[in-house]
Length: 324
Length: 283
Image (cartoon, rainbow over all chains, first blue to last red; front, side, top):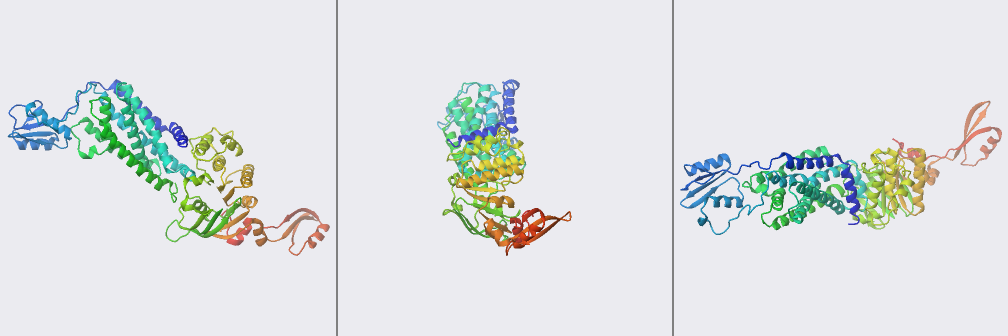
């Protein structure tokens, strides 16, 4: 740690002297202002629409169709959900509902005495009442504060390439691991501080700080490592920029699931930000759900990213034969 | 200390060798000059020796340790100064040195004293991006000296420097030799090589063409003669005397004229280089 600290301090100084860092910082402040003062607290978000067939009574909020085929057609055309009741046997039609959302949907059309005894989960148990504008914060924290390391570590690394300073680093006792660890620690700390500021300035102080910091550190470390792993392939910012934008756009796709929790196909849940965004929601607006699985998964992903990043930085930047 | 045998390097992978069958050894405390024009293969050899380039073929040993097996800890003993200054341009000169000093696990020099030694004390708190090329060059050299290295690699250390500053750098390199450091000096500056090096190797087209002490090379390839400039009937004239067989003729001539200047006709390293390779050092 004694020899990593000067590297962290040096990277922090470079960060403070980089215009992109201040642009990101200002954008975080703008987000806080917009959420607190410009977005109303009671705007409505439309939920999933439901088509049903075969129920003797009208289901509140659901559209009753004339036959099963009409339900299928409606689901296919609108991307919503449908339930067909054939003599008590329920068939759920959907285009990508999470397991929990499917259970909730089915249970909502069943009389309580007819509900199966097991495997029923509720998305939010006694949720803390929160204004809709504040419910946007998990999304903003995930896609601004947490990805700060992804962007800034690449900017610093590409500057180092441009200034050829990595050649000097390679003939020092620095080594690959210290290079990676110093940057990861710095951006994990800065990202976690930014995330905390965003949360405190909007939601307030009433949340589990320990879990919040743990989640932020893990998330920031993961994205910093991914940022370095991508940046090693590029010589300058102009080449890297397009790829970074595409990656960040893909990373933001779980926003769809966050806005419409019923839409959670596998390819979205596999994106690390999917777990992070719902974990932030749980921490800021707790329902009592355990996040241990999320931490284990994020921890495993961070460990894998560290291994990949170490290999790539060594192979592409700091290994003999690379004229960095 | 450093042993290089049958070193080859091929950037293209098509048998076009930038360095071909290069062999030499450098003893502890020696200043070894690698002299050659741009593109001769000097920097390629230095880059292989410092581990920046992969060893493709041949042997490079540091007291029995192969360059391909060097660990980061080895670089606690090494200092490298590059021809193209490579610095953190957004950091000050002081911050640049402080950062690199933090990477070593051996005691390092006082950063301010080192900056003072290379004439950058006044500019210590200015960003490196505001430095002139010569200042960047000096800062790069100072960085190479941070860990008081046993082995020092210097690539064109006086390139782009004014004569006074270059003389200061030359003295600094001699100081390193006095304290026992081994210096591998890559340059096309014949005067620097002549004044500093215990031995020099001429490299041309990736091959070593000659290797010896500057004095021996001059003896081997130079001409022992003296040129006298004198006035004759109010006009300036000159005459060259071959002194291989003695100075009698020269002595007798001197009694008869009013000499203005007397110069030995000793060959410079550049003269010898041209004679051996057929091309100049600055080509």
